Amino acid sequence: MPIRLIALDIDGTLLDGQSQLPDINRRAILDAAARGIEIALVTGRRYDFAMPIARQIPCPLTMIVNNGAMVKSSDGTTRLVHRLPLDVARRVIEATPQFREMASICFDRPRENQLIFERIDWDDPLRSGYFKRNREFIAEVSPILDCLTEDPIQVMFTGAVSPARELEATLIRLPFAQEYSLALTLYEDRDFGLVDVISPGCSKGATLAEWVRRRGWSREDVMAIGDNLNDREMLEYAGVPIVMANSVPELKALGWRETLTNDEGGVAAAIEAYAR
Image (cartoon, rainbow, N blue to C red; front, side, top):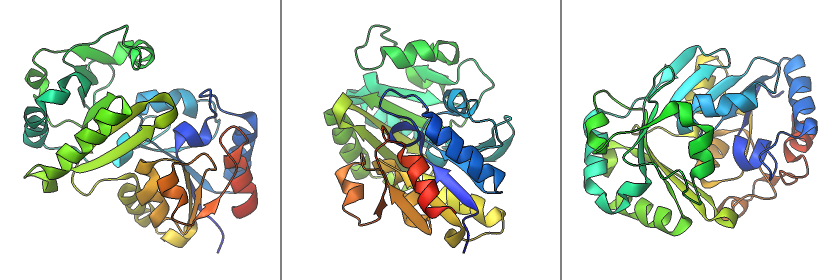
């Protein structure tokens, strides 16, 4: 059965080790789109943080962002939203005071005040680059709970790998853990981790499945490529799951097809091999 949709993670997959889009990947995507294959960028990034990458690919794109909490087209049209209930977001923040410096709350807003932190350290060695690239979208509110005036898209924690793992374990054990889902992303080489708290049942894979059903297709029509822990559900859903050679060991151990690294044009190689 021919592939109808290619689902691509961005960081560590589509982009190389310098966070650049290789020309070989761009050309392969454009060729696939010209053959009628839908291209979906499926990422933990917010829409506005993913769009600088999408704009480098001059074809229609489906944007599954915030680890599945939102689906937009690359022209900005919202197709699907799964918000986190305000009360759940509040209880998550209240239950994790030791991780408050890592916490932020993301809202579905046109531009300003999309991402709220209690305090922004513009010189933070791990996050200063992210803060500066997203300056127009972020703001400080202290205490952070005061910003919860509407249902957010997610609660996001960012920081070093060790506290990110500790936080995930803490969130799994909370008595109301069934009221939200977690997405963990780790970059061991940079000692950077993200823990996203999103709507219950939400994930890259669940939203991809929902989108594919809306298109009238099945999982056998889908090829997915990823490299990190938050890609697992997406890869489990896809009829053709492919992991990058630079993937985390937990994904490699599952025995799926493996392509080249992100510095070797692994996305292009996978499209050439499996989406013809």
